[in-house]
Each structure stands twice: as C-alpha cells, then as structure tokens.
Amino acid sequence: MEKNNTELNISIEEKGWETALPDFQELSNKVMQKTIDFVQNHDEIDFLSLNKTISVNLSLSNDENIHKLNLEFRNMDKPTNVLSFANIDDPFFEEQIQTDDIIELGDIMIALETMQREAKEKEISLHDHYCHLFIHGILHLLGFDHIEDDEAEYMEDFEVRILAELNIANPYQE
Image (tube, rainbow, N blue to C red):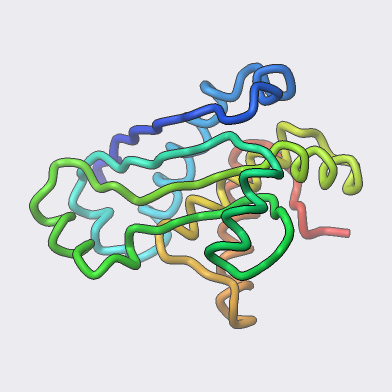
C-alpha cells in the first residue's frame, strides 16, 4: 500500500514552546507521518486510500488562547490540553477530497502550560506527553472520537499502538 505524504503547517502562538520542546518541528512531522501511516494500515478511512497529501494545521498555543476557544466552541470555561477542529465535519469535505490534490484535515491547538502541568503530574516527559496529545488531535481530525466507551477504547488502542511505534510508554497504564 502506498503511503500518504503529509504536510504540517505549524504556527507558534506561545514563544515558550521553542524552549520547552526545541525539536518540535522535526518531532511533529515524525508523529504526524507515523499516525497517518498507522491509521492507513489499520483502519478503513476511505479518503486515505486516495494517496493524496494529508495536511494539518498545528498551533502551538497557550492556556489563555485555548481557554477562549474552549469556551466559545465547547462551552467549557477553562483551558484544556488539546483542541481539534476537524474538516471532516464540514458538509463539503467529501466534495473537497475528491477535487483537491491536498486533503486538509483541519486544525489542532495544544496549550503549553496545561501540557506542562499534566506531564509533571503524570511524571512523564514533555516530549512523550506532546506526542500523545498530537496523536490524539490527529485521530480526532480523522474522525475518531471518545464519547462512547467503545469509541474511547478503539481510539485509545490506536494511541497506545502509535506511541509504542515511537518508543513511548502507554499513557493509560497505571
């Protein structure tokens, strides 16, 4: 099976990212490619078989910006670690993937301070937690969800297996 190319557009809204994860560009590209390849080999997402470039917009942000968006779009008055805005939910997505050379999956935003706090609480590295959050966000853009228990188990299984391919421990294991 031919692999999809990936295109990652990163914007830095919080300068602290450059110090916290200096290799974010290389790491992000690696995580995205690994995630797309894994899903293409293990799930029946029709548009991945088109072998088009898969594009994601990633904003490395902060709690303040994420808090505003979380309130606006999810009615939750607090910051969160990662937000995903999936184009797959757009009524014109099916038409777009048939006509365009690039499949625009959507936008992911990760809050630095929340990620740092969670990594410290879980006693894991920023690197590992970042990889997990980014994989989680990409899976949402691909249509995965965790509202129902069976969906959550399926999505978590993919996260754990992709993380293992990156030599990162299972974040759900106690």
